[in-house]
Image (cartoon, rainbow, N blue to C red; front, side, top):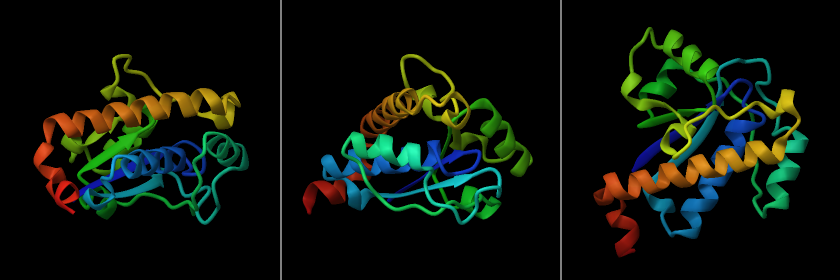
Length: 161
């Protein structure tokens, strides 16, 4: 099983969008048994809140639905995940501070797996939820492609059941 956590600042826009998009991608490919997927915020400012309504609306417009409650990431969460995929450079720095620079081998910017590495701009500020969705979907698809190519043995259970 591959444990994947998506991380943004408050865990109400980008990281829950990424979590639900990625869950949808692996469901479409019959790979749900090979993953445990979660999302977190680097801040506790939104802890306990649901997904931000414009983010939820954007997901629904693309046929993706799901429930979510915001939570802040802890060092234990970092330790218990194989991949921590952050949305931007600020999230990356926050996690490096949290881990005192450790665990860098499992912390990546989500869009670093794409042909166009970039930050996923925070739609809380830009108000462009469609652009965030597009960037996140691109990152999730490319990350899944990376895993399928680099770790094909991790998907044996899904292929036989």
